[in-house]
Image (cartoon, rainbow, N blue to C red; front, side, top):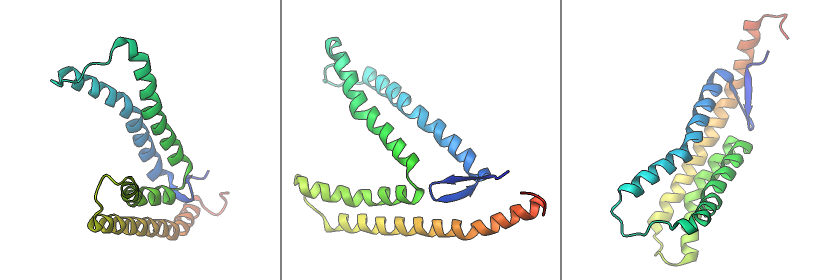
Length: 157
């Protein structure tokens, strides 16, 4: 029996992976309902001059919330599940640089070379850390397999 799960292109021992995956799944499962409850409580106690959503437009409001909030979160989670860990880290690390360029295109904000330098600096080091982590996992993997074979004995398949 093999005790290794595969995550994308990286393999981790199941003893490391399974508890982390279960914890993250439980946290993600409660994120949206928790946000809805918190928003409802804050809207009830808020002293804002914003009008409440009219009951006639409640269905439109719910549909827009599903389309603009729930659907992108769902697609994001599916994408993360299907992509390799390195790909996810690279995309997340390049996000601030992409956001900087989108703000340049829009033109409402003045560009700052310091902001761009910080975003590029972060992206370079985050990608380098992800590559180093992948290399460390892959170089430790043969030793893990040898230890499992030694523990299992010579007749295990």
